[in-house]
Image (cartoon, rainbow, N blue to C red; front, side, top):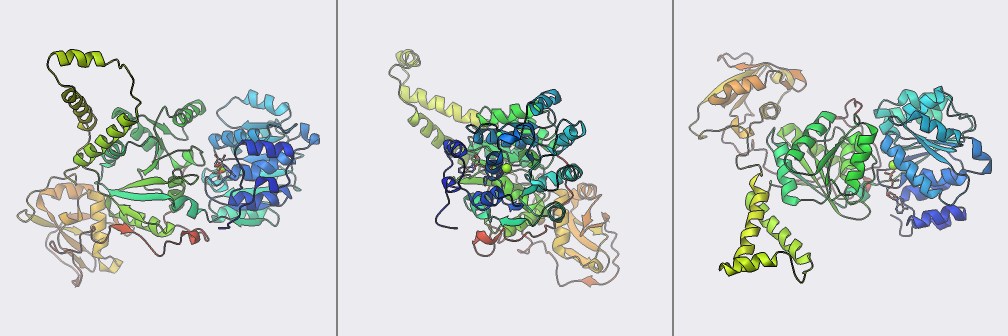
Length: 586
Ligand code: ADP
Ligand code: MG
């Protein structure tokens, strides 16, 4: 990082724009702004790669506003495409602030789920900067209510996300419909091949700017994970919310359905939670965002796409309820906390071995430590509640004559001491707050008898050494499918084309049922009770004996830490992520 930062007043901006920027409290430029604004002002094509929260809106918004001159009254001169309505609105608001003192700038936001007529009216009034989602912009182009003949600049904001959301066709149509002699600016957090294809096709000698912003987001965030049994993530989340009681937090899920279900569950438990996802009506989404921003609700449950780029400051904690489907998403998610130099905390919930390994991948990818924590127990929570009450009461200013004094007077006349009364009330409050908390004394969902004496049987799995499997694959798959602990399974014998595993007899039915569609190493397998026959040779050098230590996945898993802590290099190259799946529209 350079020691001396460039200031906005070194940019040679018009006085009107500079004043507006300064009034917003911007003095120093962020790295992406410093590198891209001068180039964009010169009219060059730019590819800007940096994370959420690095100030990209100003990076393209300031040049857009500055470029408007008195001839632009009747034409759209800059078109900005954003993936979601929220992001379009947010960019629109910020650009309007930049344009506050500059005459002749007329910005207009167009997105789905809002009145077409109003947008057409705004466009007709002479909008020269249009900010919109690709679908709605395309709509307006078809209706000829946006005219782009005089367009000078197109900005693709969060380009990767727009492609993820299926806007590729719209974007290409739009780019094919604007003058060839134009500037094209593209911002994206990641550079998958599809983005490179767009830049090659539609940009002219673009300058690439890469900001290694992992250092900014990841470094300031304390990252922890909790391992919880399958099916108990919601309970664990309730417990953590009750224990830490963050003033403002975000919870990430992978699907809209999960967002809805989890939000409902949290509300049922008395938390002020709201959900946000792409299926909601515009009015609902605005309402949700406003409620969260002004602290009416303290927990925002969201999908990655719905939350992308949303700028809310002061989020204390990010929870990953589901592991993100893409390593990059993890960075985006936790980047919601710890913004602008503040520290933040991210907690990830994992169940089963596969998720453990996936999280370890993430830790490697971001080159940062993610430390395991035990779920807080009741005593721990009570201790935290006591501290919180002490903080709360000592901060409250003493009122000279409190409403409740006459209650104390009356109780005192019955011989009750004030200390005693206060203690009773505080105890009641603590008990009320912790009474409904889920119990985590039994770490696994299944009842288990006395270990040493319990009877075992063997199940037979239709995959063996010929498919290059190892005992930990088998064990991992079984733990994953059943939610049981690795310790519940006994000896694993791998033969050429099948494998036998010792399992508790009492759980046989449950195990057979929950492994009906089991896949190991990508291959569908069948699991049945072993009939005692073996075929092929036994691979005997590796087996997970009942009492052996190494089958306990907890050994050496205290910290997930890899390599040096030099995080600045994390971002320099995009590593295609093997876990990236085809993303659906959220
Ligand atoms: P991105 O698009 O990269 O996610 P935003 O443009 O939404 O980031 O900016 C994130 C936040 O940082 C916004 O609240 C914005 O007002 C603020 N911001 C941007 N640039 C600066 C700056 N140079 N100085 C101070 N704050 C800034
Ligand atoms: Mg942005």
